[in-house]
Image (cartoon, rainbow, N blue to C red; front, side):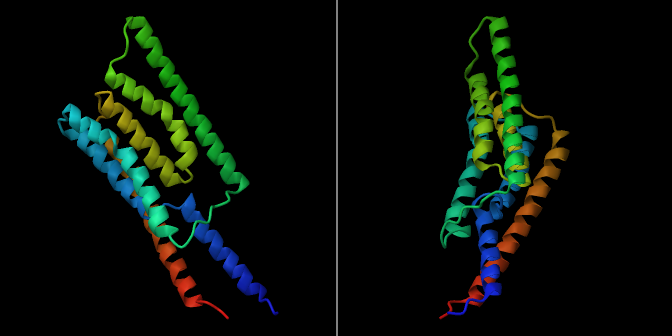
Amino acid sequence: MHVNLDDLDQLAARAQRYARYSRSAGGLSSVIGGILLFASFLANAYLELAAVNRVVLALAPLLWLLAKELLRVGYYQRDGRVLQAPTEKEKRSHRWTVIYLGVISALVLGMLAYSAFQAGRVPDAGMLGYAVIVATLPLIAWRWFWSVSDFLVGVLLMCQSAVVIGGGNYPPIWLLYVGACAAIAVLYGLREHRDYLALKAEFAAQGPRG
């Protein structure tokens, strides 16, 4: 049996491109995340939020993660799951990102605990919710933040969620930075989605071979 090495190389390259959508390529989920990010900061900056509305707004990271998983399983990898094998550079970057967020989270939690001790009182429900979100940030990052857009959207959404549930808000000046991060995520996502459509067309053009 004759094996065309060029065909095997092309197939391997396509498999690697397809595998990206299991981890580092979000596609439309990055678009959704960017829009959700800017909308949530905008709402908390300018709207008067009741307690129930704050809880709803604090759920934004969960909605984004749900969208990521649904799009991954139901769309981008619906033809079968192929797990991306990150390079050593990607592994190091991911590891240091998680460590960085872990250190920041530990410092914030330490300051919260110290403030509660100094005040001689148990934190209220809002502050406990804030602490839970801060504590889970490194774990969420370890599982889901494998790209620049994931990091920008995920960290800001969770920071916003923590502040909202704690009863606070970011000042409107933050919208400039958040808007830039949201735009980056949307642009990344659209490019990844376009690449996926091109990949899908390549697979369709190749078709089954006898």
